[in-house]
Length: 569
Image 1 (cartoon, rainbow, N blue to C red):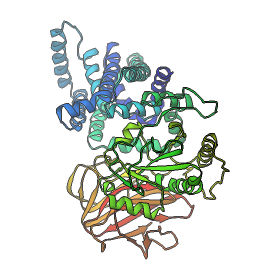
Image 2: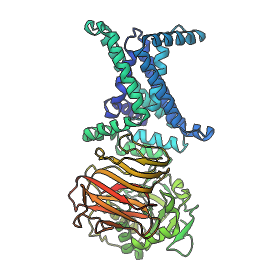
Image 3: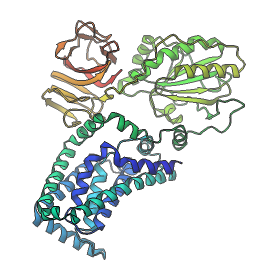
Image 4: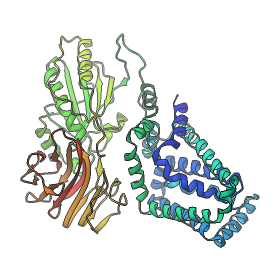
C-alpha cells in the first residue's frame, strides 16, 4: 500500500506550486539539444541526487562533519555555470569538449548536449530542490534525519522518486520536442537559449540568497486550498497506520473483545531526568491496574498549552476512578531543560499530575514519538490502546478514557469539560523560528547565518518577518544587541512569542499596524503597550478576540533579550 501511494504521491508532485520554479531550468537545459538522451539524463540526475541526499545526508554530516550548505553552494555554482554556458556559446563549446572527453574516457560517446551534461544538471537540481511534504515524504525525511534507515524505507523512497521522475521526463522531453519541431521558435533558438541562460543564472542567485524559498512561500500562499489538497494526498487512516509501522509503531493486532484495538505494550519511563509532582520515579509496573494517559508536551508550545486545560480536567475528574496522567516534558529549546522553568509552568497551568523531564529524549524515542502534543492512552494491563497527535478530538479522547476505566471494572460516568476547543480551523501564519538553524521566513532571503549583524527594518510580505538594528543570530535564538526591532506581517487571531529576558527590567514595546497596540487587542502579557517580562516562556502579544486578519506587528526590544519562535492562534 505504501509503495503504491508513494509512487502516486510522486506523480502528483509535478502539480504542486513548490516544483514550478524548477521547471524553467529543466526546460532551458534541453533547449538547443537534439539528443533525446538529455531529458533522460536530467530526470535521472534529479532522481539520483534527491533520493541519495534525502536518505544519506544525516550519515554524511555525522561521518565527515561538514556543513550541508556546502552541497547547496556547489549546486548553485554548477547551475549558474551551465546558465552562463547558454549565454556564451564559446563556453558551451568548451563544456561539450570537456564532457565529450570525460565520457569517452569511460567508453561512452555522449556529448555535452546529451545524457552526460543533462545528468550533471539533474544532480545539481536534486540537491537544491525541496518538494512540498505530504505524509509519505514527511515520514521519509524524519526517519532519514534520525538515521532510521531500513530496506522498507529505501523501497518507499525509490517508489516516490520514480513517481516524480515520470512526469519530469515527460515535461523535459515534451518541451524539447516542442522547441525543436516549431519552425517559428527554431529561428530564434540562439536568442531563446540566451534568455533561458539568464533565467538559470537568476535562479542560481535566488537559490544562493534563499529567495527561492520566498518564491515557493508566495506560491503556496497564492493557492492554499490547492496546495493543501496536494500535500494531504494519501492522508488516510490506512496510510497513517502503515506509516506508524514504518516509524516503528505497531498497528493493532487484537481487540480484546473491544472496538478499541490493542496497539503494543507501553514503553517504560526509563531515561527521565527528573520527576516533578511525584516523590519517586514512576514505572509502568507501578501503574498496573490503572488507565494511564501519557502526554508529551513542552511548556512554550502553544498547541500543548491549548491542550493542557482538557488534560488537567481529565485528571482532576477521573483520578479517583483509577486514572493517571503522566506528563512527559520533552524540551524544544535549551532553556526548557531547566527544572525551575518547568516547575513554574506546572504552577502556571495548574498541573497536579506527575511530570517527568525527558531532557535527553529517551522516553520520546522509546515511544517513537514525533509530535508536540502527543497523547498515548494505555489500558489497565499496560497496553497502548489509542494515540492522538496535535490538538482537538477532546470529546473522543474523554469517551475512550471512560471506556477503558469501565473495561478495568471501574464504575464511572463521563463528565465532559465545559471548555471551548481552541484548535485553529483556518489557515494561519506558520510557526516561525528566529534562530538560523530553522529560520525560513526572514524577508527577503528566507534566512541568514550566525553572528552579530546589522539589519534594515522593512515591511515584509505576508507570513514573513524582518529584523532591524543590530542582532546576534544563533542556531536557536536571536539576541537583541542595539536598537533591535522586528516586523512580522501575520494572519491570525492571536500572536505568541517565546522570549527569554536578560533581566526583570527588560521590555518589549508592541505596535500593531503602525500604532502602539491598543489595550482592546493587547495580548494577556501586554500592559500599556509593553510586554511584562518575567522569565523564559511563551508570551501572548496580540489578541484580536476572534477577528482573525492580516496585520503588521512591530516589536522594539531593550538590549540582551533572546527571542526564539512565533506561534499563532
